[in-house]
Image (tube, rainbow, N blue to C red; front, side, top):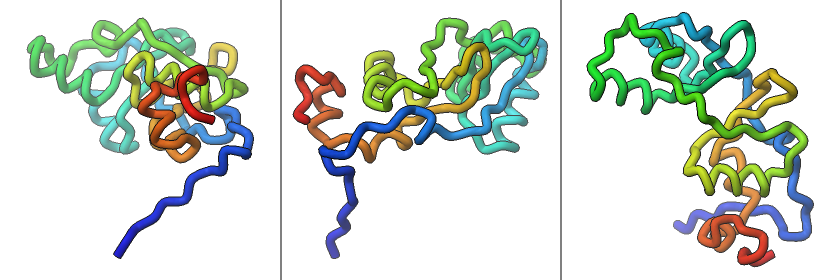
Length: 150
């Protein structure tokens, strides 16, 4: 049996991030603990949460980073997520096109990227959300519009 996957025709326009992003976004305050983050991730079956302070996003933490911190740094479950979250994070906007967002994900080796509308996180865009919009050659070329075939 041969399995075939449908792909978008090259003539179809590339959609905006808002058309393919997923949500809702799970947020935790900087004062929440690593234990709380792990529980929330399990409960909501998500691999990343946005860390906020006074309602504004200030960082993100992934399940990989959380487990890595717990093992490598020997932090306790009572350590605050604000102390261990990544505060250097890349975001995209809902009206960005998917190709540009995918380029940012590729450039920064990200599996998921937060989508911000103003100062509010409205969703995440994952590799799985954008994969069907590009040919394999696009991914090999790093989704660079100058080198990727159209």
